[in-house]
Each structure stands twice: as C-alpha cells, then as structure tokens.
Image (cartoon, rainbow, N blue to C red; front, side, top):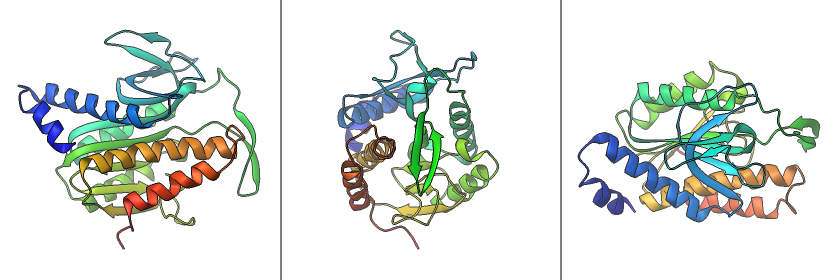
Length: 256
C-alpha cells in the first residue's frame, strides 16, 4: 500500500496534488472495508443553525440516517446528524498542523444536532441518559516532523483545554505509531471510550501502511457498532466485541 502511494505521488508536481492523491487513497481504502451502510467521502458538515465546517478530508456518515444535502464532483455537504467520524489526512504532520487539525475536528463536533431525535435511554455503566451517536475525530498522517511522544504531549494539552465532547480521539502516523486518547479503566487502555478524559496511550508501530489503514477502518467500524449495540440499534454486542478483539490483535500492546 505504501509503495502504491509513492507510485501515485512520484509523478505529481505540487505538494497540494500529492496531498490530494493521498486523501483519495485513504478514503478509497476506508470505503472498501466499511459496511455499505456507512459512506466515506470528503466534504463539509452543517447544522440546523446554519453553521458549516470547512472542508474535511474524510467524513464517515450513516446513509440510513440522512443522505448528503448537496453533492457535486467538487463539493459535498452533509447534515451533522449523519456524521459518525471525521478524519483529517496529512502528508506530514507538524505540531502547528496538529493544533490546526484538532480545531477543525472540534468545530465539527461542536455542531448542533437537532434535526433527528437522540437515541434515548441508553444504558452505559448503569447510567441511563439521552445520547447522540458520538462523532469520532482523528488525524491520519503519513509522516511527522516531531516525535510520537512530543505529538502526544501536544495532543494531551489540547484535549485538556477544550470541552470533553469536542476532543480529538486519536492520531495515527504511518512512520511512528498511534496516539489514543481516553480513559484507562477498561480492558483496552485509551481505546474504549476515546477522549472521555485527558489520558493518553501510545502505541509504537512497525506495521505496513495497509495494516495501519486497516486499524483506522476497524477503529471507526468498532466505535459505530459499539454504540449501536448499546443503543439497541444492532442485534447484540457480539459483533462489536469481535471488532474490539480484531483491533487488539492489529495494534498489539501499548508502550509502557
């Protein structure tokens, strides 16, 4: 997969074209491995109050919830209620770039979801409450100009400065590894309920690009299946648990 990306980008003259080719490749991979119910496109999100995000590199949306409000070869606009994940794709991630992407994700998560009814009476750790399907937000990068640890420190600082529901959930870097944000009180630290707290789990990886893309896709699919099972929108937690175990096998142990 990495050589395929290099073959595509070697003949492109500008860094903008190179970035666009990589975004297309990531979307195509995710689209192939997600269930048909979930679409994967680039585009903007909007809410009933007229707020609109900027262009997002990857929007995973629920086709059954709502179709795109507008779609053309160059512009797509989705109702925020249909969004299940938003991901920014970077050729090379820097510390300022991480902050910029985190702000884009924060704005997407902050949209007002009011056009459809929330899933009601979801039972989670013994608590009953109204709940919207969470929007997973992250960054997928091919390279980084800072160490994984330094990026993790920056990510943790950012997440502790914004509202809990608007935090960045993960960063995946092909050449470095994975940063997962969240609680450590479940059986897979940092990955069960992302960004619920300012905790951070670091996974240094040596997998192939295709395996890292599969981690991204499985992570998104798992989070969707998990919530739907808790909310009674899927038959049981068995499939979500299967995806959780698959993710565990792909990622391996966290760095101590």
